[in-house]
Image (cartoon, rainbow, N blue to C red; front, side, top):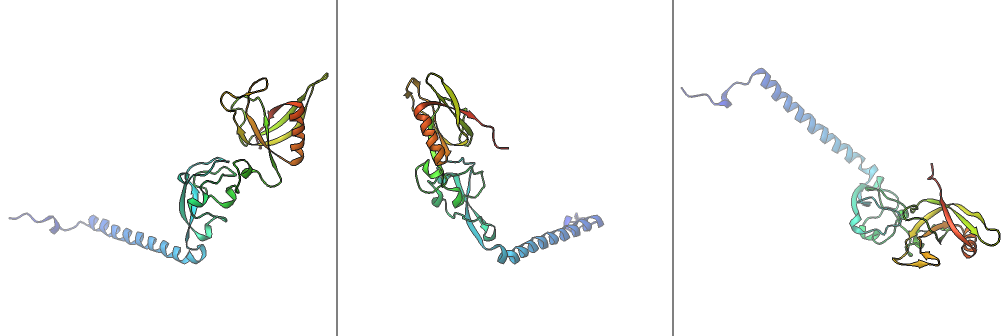
Length: 220
């Protein structure tokens, strides 16, 4: 007597229940996805069509010249695109950043420095970049730190006074290998953001005093 085919066997009540549940689950999933797509389509007039937005492909530091390899383009609904968005990586390449940017953050026009040199392009309107030569050990001061500038005047009665407080370090220029300043090895130059009046006071101190800096605590 031939063996009945497995397809000819009758399904048990439990098998029929599982099969019915699978069909219902599949229909529910399709309805859910279809409903989501319908809602997205209904919201399209509000959110707008997708537009290209350039974002950072990695963490980028302030003052860094942007390279195309460090950027990527993402499509974002126009209603959620940031103001001043940039659409192509080529439009941002070669420009310096005026603030730190985390991976995935949008690169906007306000995040990029205006045309100019690597230092001048980072100076906000109304301020000046003033370099001072100090003997601080390498690594003790970083861009973004705030420092107090102290001047020690010589003469019969030497004294020290604070010329300016809480100045932001814009960047640091390390000496060239083997470079020497008067009296010994050259130290790093701190480029500070200052107002015009503070720049005059610092210029006087540079001419008649030895300068040093005290590092202020970070802003709370």
